[in-house]
Length: 514
Image (cartoon, rainbow, N blue to C red):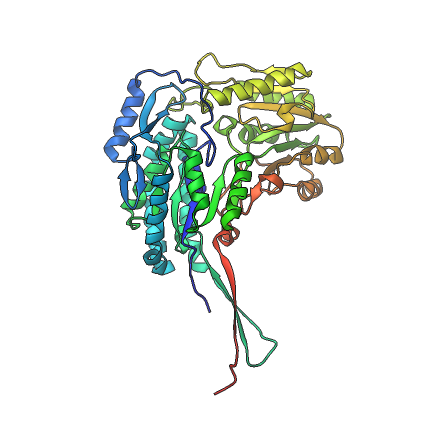
């Protein structure tokens, strides 16, 4: 026996919006109050923006109840291209009133949307997925324009994010309840699951993207409308993060929050959600270790570490934050890795061959600088880079720092930039201890040719994700999430479905009477 009765509203910064809003924010202030260096749009950027506008995907308003709207007080926020400092467009600076209207819209849309069968909702989501893939090039260009990452990487991000929509559309039809054998002859026991993964199982949503990178979220919402998803099912608000967050947390109509971002903001969400006992799913900060053992294949280790560390200029929560190298291979690895990093081409993400783009804003650069300065002052050595790039703006040189110790900021906290700190270790036990000596527990990486060791270390590491001889491990068909202060719950796979399910026990008695 099986019923679907979803929770009315889910507030999301989900895997779909992850592809569009890096870095993410929720109830936090903007990352920096430092002034942007601005100038007129370049010819190339104008061309991209013009094409996006013509396609209808360059949206600059919020979405409430199926209508594109400005902030009620007409206030706006500028969205910048971090590679050039150019203003792309202005978006509304929304607050509590707009958020409350978005919640009401989602609440009103809940009943008709949730009454559709899983198959009907699956068709809508499949259409949305098809549109996302059909507009992959435009979405990738929009990511590069507002976030700065190389276009090739941005295109991969679109496919990856869209894959979660496709997977949910398929998996939602395979969420079942159970019939439990009763200990008494006249009773039948059922376990009923309700509230499926957001839209797939009937929830309606309010999406709050980062103010720094809202445009791709808005484009994805436009494609949701084009896919026929009814008005009010998907809503998007952005602007005054504290006001928006307070409204979402205070509403009794909001029953679930899923968030990707910093651990500090995640803790605020947990505390705020307690007032109305909301369910929360959190993907928070990381401090990922990348352990290189003496017996590792050097080429595989260099390639894998490069991928784990420098994608998106080091600005992902699963980026390798500490490269922990066994002393017998340390010098060889440091030399080979530094040479590989030296070959990374830095520039505007639209330039052919570019591997690393800019950091998201000036505050991000200043954080990287402070971490590097701290390490140098405590005895670390710059093997490569270590300063702002000659391109200016928020570009930073791909950097390798040697002789890093555990007391340095580079080892203790997430740098969120293109800096690879190298730490030495002697024994397997020491490597495990160094790796686990953190409050974070999202991703970890191991490079070894010893199969027994790979299993021992993987089991000992206190992390939700472990890559063995591989630097790119994320996929929509596997559970994604951390332990300790890196979050709660999982995204992706059948286990990610459980984050949107409530279990209900039904006991049906007196079954033997006529």
